Image 1: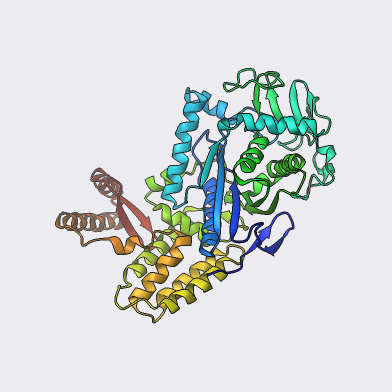
Image 2: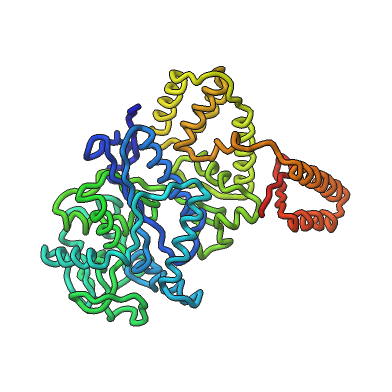
Length: 473
């Protein structure tokens, strides 16, 4: 099966038919995490949607190679060249070394990805593995006249470019020095949009990770790492570059500037950006309000698949507002979906013609700018189809290659062992007693029952559809 895919391209500001540089093959790059803390669920929305994009392209018949960097040095607390290195801040916070922090939070990130059904990219490259490549790229930019040395740092000279703002559609007069957090006056810069390629000891003397370079002991700027890692593993021509909308400027704008100056030609054809996950207070971040992680949602009784479904119900280019009420609705929808899938028997022989029909409809729906909500509609229609059970199971399994909602687990459950039946009876009786206590306003007893169940490894959660429970150990 080979179907057309259409993507919104930030570079052109319109939906375009996706045509890779090499027929049948896709080279795809994802901006990875800065591993100084846990990823919050807003970060993970981006990785869920990039995961869907990759899996859709594979489903549509492409051979995909996806690369992700791990930022373990060089990302400052501002996305410009100001503030403290995030990795150093994380090390200070936890009284550990930078590399200890990096290893711990890299593992934590991929564990969250596993819980959310996000496929690990084909190549995962930490920035600290590639210092020699960064230096070589910076040397070439200096030789070509696109970079300069000032105050012992190396800067990229944005005035050498005809259209620095092509990706972001920014205007130079909008960048008032000292007003935006990513633009701070730096006496070493020739132009306010210039950015650092290499920091030396002239900045951040307490930096833990430093390397020798032709310009002195120091460390790379954040922007150089993605360009260098992508070129190292994907070559001079890339098809799709992914990230959140907050990466458009300055990070991705700077990536284009330095990569095309280095290569001497256009670098990447399609730029895929995911909008923010917001709370009622605005964009989600690690510094505002409750720090929402996958583990926190689990502690509150939510299946990570409910959060994935919550994301798939919305379009990636629209801001998505998070609330527990909205997540409750997604959790209820997921529970109902699993029940519907479980009710499909395996009777009959698979009708491949019907399966292919639904696969084509699904690929066309999702291929319309990664429209996951329409893809879900095709799934629900397949579950209602009059085809026999074996055929519907085959359709569900095929579509879940992209949706990754772990729908097959509905059929993998074996008959409940006798001891589990006893536990189920006990839990349901306790939940009924708790409901009666709450009705009588005996909240102390209701809380006591919740704690008794928790001691037995049972988490209960109240939803609009009633109380649900799951094992937590």
